Image (tube, rainbow, N blue to C red):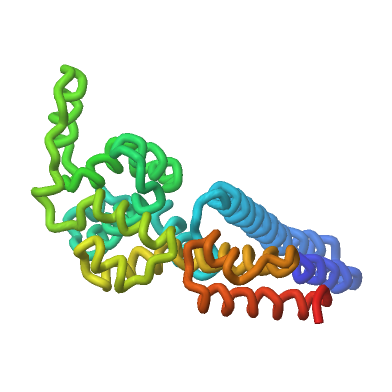
Length: 264
């Protein structure tokens, strides 16, 4: 904005010695630049609002917004037309995987509930609730398949389980991965418990930061525990961790308080 005002001022000064026609020409050439600057500022404000509101909407979820890829992926999904690129291959498969990985946020939710919540997160006019449900059910996006599913639902029938017809990781498994990571389980242990590759578990964690968020909450609890004089044993029992882990966390908590000037 300051550059635009400086430009305007310099144009005004340079036209003092010119004829009226020259002055009007200078004003005309400056106007589009000022208008464009205004448009850019509006775009920045809109983008800032979307970032803020997006963070607020996600604040109650057990994710690490700072370390994970979630905000970047949601921004990409916001403008991605999955229908246009359905036959493109890699791009769609990556987007489908990201949409399905989001189910790890709600381990106890049904497919219908997951579809509703994920559709709300995407904020994409090109992706409908039905599209999200189709992706979660492991089906390809096609009007034929979606209309067939709609007829079954409207007639009171039950949709078949499409998970066995896709090579994608089943949603219940992804929800189990989310439950494990949310509880602080390691990537390797999660992979073993859920009978899935470590690479897939790592992809879910990189996207959502569920385990990172758990570690952050544990560290915050350790700070509060040091303030309250909680013993190592009590802290370990409360959070179902080993005494050595509790000792390490409480030391971190004390270090934080020292930095804040609350402890010596």
